[in-house]
Image 1 (tube, helix red, strand yellow):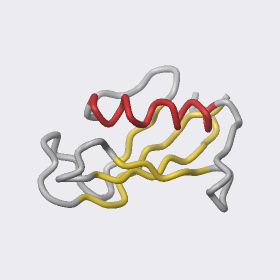
Image 2: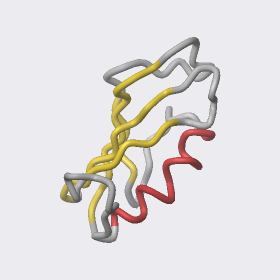
Image 3: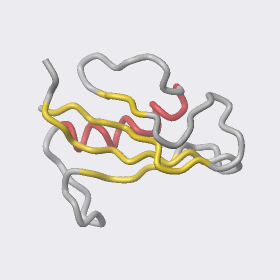
Image 4: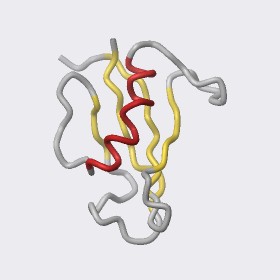
Length: 87
């Protein structure tokens, strides 16, 4: 099993949660606070695939994928990257 690092790589408009490029969050057994719940629920299925060694056929790097939050007017784009569990 892996932790997933969610890093904001793009943000347009005004993010209601205040996310900005460079923000990072770890999604794992315990997920840190501060990540917008709308984004979390959107990222979660993708994070689960990576967390349990899956990958996405459209990605060149099997250890990552890119996912946007559901706010089409003010999109925040996250890169999800598989990382070893931090103990």
